Amino acid sequence: MASFTDKKLSDVYKDILHTDNSNTGISSTIKQIKCGDGDTSALYLSDRNLKAQPSTDSTTNSVICDADGNALLTVDSTNDLVKAGIGQHTVNTQYAYFGVSSGVGANYVNNRHHVLSFGGNTQTDALADNFQLGTGTDPDTSFTTADGAGTDASVVVPCMWLVPDNVTIDAVYSLEGGDNATGATTRMHLMSYTFNSGSTSALADGTLLAHNSDVTNAGSEQAYKSTWTVDSADVAGNKVILATFLTTDVTGDYSVSVMVKYHLR
Image 1: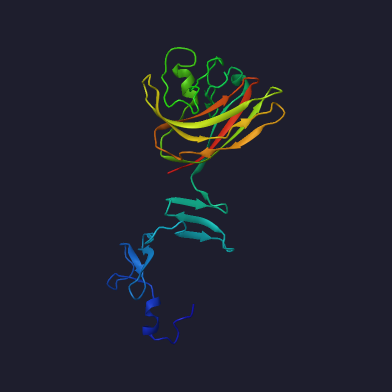
Image 2 (image 1 turned 90 degrees about the vertical axis):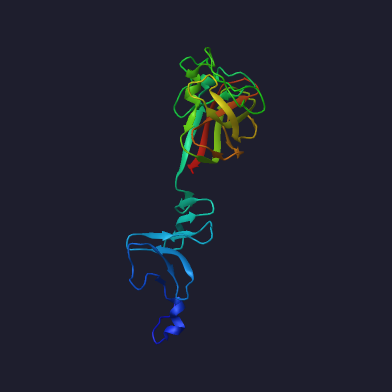
């Protein structure tokens, strides 16, 4: 940019940035920075605050780069996100995990949506007590607890991921492996529910969040990775999230790990 040296004010005043403050300079009251002809910028300034507020939302409203021009911090006001790092990941990206080992999976019944444990939990001390969500194309959208194997509260709690805040599901991946020479077709789902604390109508308002494509599992000599389809990304706070596994034939026992990539919103 050329300097103002030897220039008349009338030739450069539009390029001079200032705040409307009755010629008192910067004060404790934040003011919008303008150019000499009155056009406004996205910057606001005081002796205590700095604010950036665009007139129009964009996926790259504010960008901080390194010396090579790589974006290190980006504010996406269109989607209300902040991204950081060379890979430009959402700054509050987190991961949650569901899974089962073949010891519990040995008790699975074919063509039923068996619910996987959340985190490091185990479903129950009695491995035969397996929590199931029906035999439909997708898992059941509600579940009633009752005294008995597979329905009491002790098998439900270790499988629930309670999300206290609004979250968005960004991606879901899974790994699975069997222990038999021959395998079967397997499929998995991620569901959200309204959790009714203290009620036997424990789970209600089920919503399909994500699912994987059917895996034709050929047996114990190979493990499989799936990248899931996200069907409904946004989950409201105080919902619970569950993951399920179904096999069309119990010719073997399965170990399964499900990884959920998400961010707070």
